[in-house]
Length: 485
Image 1 (cartoon, rainbow, N blue to C red):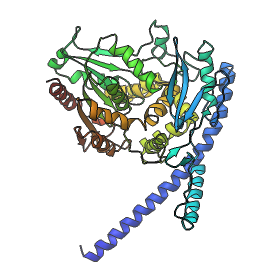
Image 2 (image 1 turned 45 degrees about the vertical axis):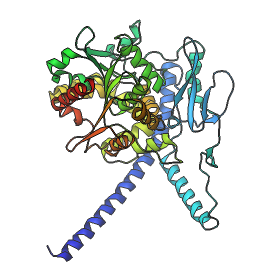
Image 3 (image 1 turned 30 degrees about the horizontal axis):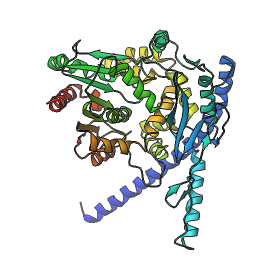
Image 4 (image 1 turned 90 degrees about the vertical axis):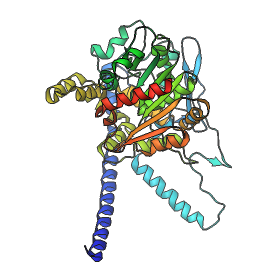
């Protein structure tokens, strides 16, 4: 092909690419502007439905954060960009860390307007003095952030029930599924996670803890890897796959905020303590990688190896609030690819995501039946089961408090893994992963140089395990053997 034609073709491709981006941005703006309005309408709709059906409405996060309120029960404190609440347990009060993204999510129109005004101010002031800077909403001055105290009425209302000695909604609500599988935990004397355990009855040569990702379940491991482990591995290692708090067959308390501490405590109370696990390997996927790192830092002498699949570690630029940055990386409010669109709706719109849960999770048995009928494929069926078996309260708070809320903590966790842990670290990532980019795995390796990263060219966020369970089972056995030796 002549050079002239190649140049014309190159320019044409550039124009088409630019046009596609502009169209995509325009469509995204229109769609998410509409969703901003729809979420507001659904807010009032759910308040009315809650009041009619339950004689009270569930507090939501539409209200903005308020100034400090010191009256009884109103105890959400936000200081230096981090939010904490006072939580009442049976024996003591403790601080729980929550993400400000729960109640600070500006509409797309407001965000674009604000960024435009700030840019105009910057251009205007740039010419006047090189020493003049535009103050951000965090009021950064002389390298420090002004300490402020704020209270959010939603968490205040949720905590008042606990402080008053009673739970607001310890069991399922009208918009949650009330089937036997989803509510079996309410009749149990112990509120512990559902644990699928396999391997030798007595203590083996090693234990392995499997932690699933967001809106998933232990079946992600038990239906793929467990049947493919060798007989030698099954007779050597005790395998523990859990349903995280709020997911699968584990408890789904409606008054929980699903904080990092709650998730870690439940893992310890459900696996480490009752099974007397002293040293163990961890295999974790997506959101589970955050819990795996936190657990490893909490038990530095016990972890033999860390195997992380698609870890959501985003580098946070200096001067940027970590929680907000991570939320915009995970959910960039774009209509394509579809998995990003779904993540954006789940993260930005409290009431739209509740409506989706009402349709999908409350009727999960119907969706499971239809999936079995249409696909006749067990793997696809268990993926649907994991996707549908949770409550909106669990998914909403876990998404914000774990993925977004730990944005400022992961760097410290990785520093501890690098400096204070000697365990083997292995990372797997699908090159076609459209939810969490491969750069996240390389970010982890940059912080922990000894970590091994394996990028699989033809796999995505799910097929990194589902499509290659036999090969991955062999790889895990080699990792455990190497780490135990």
